[in-house]
Length: 78
Image (cartoon, rainbow, N blue to C red; front, side, top):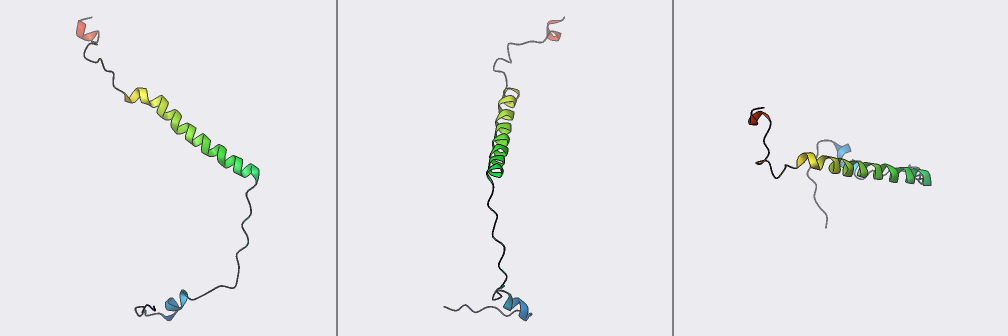
């Protein structure tokens, strides 16, 4: 039921978890419609950028399947 705490050298450390402040924080302001819309647009822009970079970068990452049949002009003696 009660846990025994190990002794600490400083009394204020032991008292710290029992301290309660009587100052209440101010209430959070609600986000306006324009702020919510801006966050959505920023998120969509980031996602579109990642998808676009994948679409543009995938051809550069893929290797051609018929590399054995292609020869450069230097190998043909030109």
